Structures are given as structure tokens and as C-alpha cells.
Length: 619
Image (cartoon, rainbow, N blue to C red; front, top):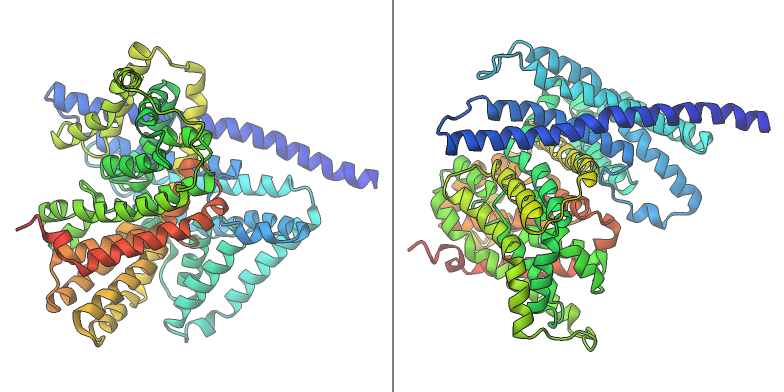
């Protein structure tokens, strides 16, 4: 027995050493990439706005570095076990079953990575024939991030399996994953004759099975997409890698890591403490006061970055520590954060609004005007739930601040409170794009920390940069996998079939609107927001016009419905982004979010039933 244990301890020890070395080799470049993105984008803004000499190559270089950041961040997240998972059912299982499912959660991603490594290499080779316009280098420099990141994740997954405490469980998990994969492969001729029934098998059945088993969300989506296309179509799998690349490389998403880092800076420099002290002096004596602040803060910062994950990353680190200190439960915090993500989908300048306008022909300025009030309506419904949940809080130990205290805290907080206005002004005045503006926020926070608050902990910069890369990689891999899934759904003909079915519904405009709400809630929960809009917007809007529904009104209903689905667990990607940003386990928010989702649906029905809320300021 001793020799058996010793023989298995040696491989685990070697794997542990290799894992540590690999960690340093990946984490340091990932941290440097975050820093490089900040420098490149800030240099681009300064050169264009201050020196009036635009750098034509800055966005291109930022895009190249961004894909490397996303993939290396995903490697760091896998090594740390920080990819978003749904473990509600896993947690309820017996210890033996739970241990087995934990190994499955490594073995299933391993299967996906084995499937994707070949197409990823082929994709990078194909990109060598494309030359970038500004830097004039082969695009394979950028595309190589996909096979390199995949190979590193493959190595990380293997090392994690070797280090597993129970080899029998590891072998059993690998055999089970291989058996399921082999069964699907053997059934390929049957699948080819099933038509769109395959959509249920792969995108409902397989996704549900893997997600509920605790397999990370991104890998669950990826397995379903690759399985569907490999076994039911003749589509080259390299095309799916291209779609994943497209989803992860959207330059606007670069604001995600930068706002994550900005949130950490705000906390580290003392700006967060100053803001919280002032806000608490205003609303600290009100039951659930800081929850109202969270709703208002998301409304104010929403749309600045164009990414909901980035909006949440800017707000959560500022408010959550104090809210927890005041007794708020982590689950309720992440539930409200996710709900405010859905609530603020229509607030301009929103990337979803811009995308919808561009694919449907609806005036973007009209969408910007129409998007303000629907967000207010949903904020009111969320605040009603906050009031109900906190109505019996004991505030006997909380003292109401006097005017002098409030004024003093305001003076200290002014530099911190000015940050959202500086960011918004930079966008509105055209100083910086929605992607670049976060770098202005970072520069402002660094200066405020060094010169005003006199707090800047240089030793924390490295772990903050690595944390930023890991969080960003986890979020971006989900978005990439969801984009691939969206493309697969389009190729199946499902989108056109759905539009024809809805156009033929009895009951006129009211029934069409109700069906649209249900359809976009479901689509939002399965797809990342922009792919859903790109896929179904051009199909649904002509039908809505025929029904006599105003374009802007329908736009608001569609976007809010999709937002509810996007942030509703168990499938909503946005909910897991909220959990990732706030570092709260997804299981904790499952129960509290139900009330908030119901409140959002009530608000959505009000917006759908009263067109004036969306169109009142247009006429």
C-alpha cells in the first residue's frame, strides 16, 4: 500500500511543480498585456486629442494584444478554477458523487480543448495570408493566440487531472466522457436525419446536462456547438473557431479588463472609501439604502463602456464591501447587480442600441432618446423589491449623519464622485471612444490616489493585473463560445423558422408582442446579447412594422426582454458575468434573484403595454 501511494505521489509532485512553473510563465505575460493595453489606448487618445496626430496603428495593436490577453486570461482562470460554473445541483449531491462531478468538470473541458486544438491551428495558419492594414504584419500574429491559449489550457487540464487525489475517479470520469463522446460519434448517421430536432438534443439537452453537472459554462457551450456542427453538418470546424474569435475580439469588449482594473484601482486608492462614506451619510439611515445607490449607480455608469460586464465591474467593487459590512448577504448583492444589468440595457450610449440600429435601420439617435425612460420604469420595480426585502431591517444602531458631517464627507468624496462624470464627458465630447474612455478613468484614478488621497500600494499592482486578466479571460471565453453557438443556430435555419411562426400567430399586435417578449427572453438566456440582435433583429422588425408597432417601442421591448434572459440563471451568461465580477458564487444568488427577475418582468410588461414610455420624448 505504501509503495502504491508513493508511486502515485511522485507524478502528483512533478505535476505540481510543472503547474507552478506554468503559472508564472502565463500570469506575468497576462499581467503585462493588461498594462500594455492601457498604455497603447491612452497613448492613442493623447496623440489624437492633445497632439492632433492620430496613431493609425493603435487600435490594431490593441486588437492583437487583446486576443492574447483573452486567451492567456482564460488559461489563468482555468488554472485557478475561476471559470464560471453552475454548481447548485453538485452541491446537493453526496460527497462521493460531488467528488466525481468535480473531476468531470475538468475532463469535459479537456474533451472540448482536444476537439478545438486542430481547427484553432488551421485557423491561425489561414490567417497568415491576411496582412493587417496599419502594421502590415501577417494576421497570424494575432490568430496564434487561439492555438497557443488552447494548448496551454489543455496542459493545465491534464496537470489538474494528474494532481487529482483519487485516480480511480479520474479514470472513471475520463472513461465516461470518452464513452459519451464515442456514443454521439457513433450516432452521427442518425443525427443527420433528425433535422432541427438536433437543436433540442445539443443546445437544450447537452447544454443543460453539462451546465447542471458543474462543467464551466464556456466549455458547455463549446461542446454543444462543436458536437452539433461536427456530427450533423458538413461545416468545417475551423469556421466555428473563426466565429469564436469574432465574438472575443470585438474591440468594445476591451473595456471589460480595463474597467475591471479601474474598479480595483478605485478600491486600492481610497476613492471607493470616500464615495461610500458620503453615500452612506446620505442614505445609510434608510432601510436598504445602499441597494438603492447600486440601482442608481448602474443607471448612471451604464452604457459608458458599451459592456454590461464592464459596467458591473466599475460599480460592484465600490459598493459591495460596505454593503456586506452592513449585513447584506452576498447572494442578494449579486442578484441585484445582475438585475440592474438587465434594467440598464437601454441606457445610451449602449452598444446594443447601436448594433440594433445598424442592423434594422432604426435611427440610433431616436433609440438613444427612447432608451432613458424604460430604464427608469425597471429601476422603480427593482426599488420596490428592495423596499420589501429590507422593510424590517433593524436600524436602531445606525445614527443619522448631520449636515456638517455630510458636507465634510462630500468635500473628501468630490474627486472620487467626479470620476463617472469625467468618463461620460470624455465620451460625449468625443475625446475618447467607449473603449478608450476606461484608460482615462484609470489615469484619473492613479493621479487621484497619488496626489489627493495619498494611497497607492505598488505591491498590489501585480496581483491586481493578474486578477484582471483571469476575470477577463473567464468572461470573454463565455462570450466567444456563445457567439459560436449563435452562428450555429443561424446555419440551422432556426432563426428564419422562428420569424415565420411568430408572423403567423393569431391575436394581432398584442399576441406578437407577447410572443416576442418570450422569444427574446429565451434567446437572451442562450445567446450573448449582440449575436441575438444581429441574428433576429432583421427578421422580426419587418413583421413588427406590418403589425403597426413603432420601431423604437419594439426596440425597447426586444432589448429589455433579451436583457432579462441574459441575466436570468441558470443559462443567462450575464448572471455568471455578475458573479465573476463580484467574486460571489453563482449558487448564492439563485434564490434572491427570483424576486428581482419577476420585478423586471413586471416593468417590461408596463413598457410593452405603454408605448409612450419609449416614444414620448420623440414627438
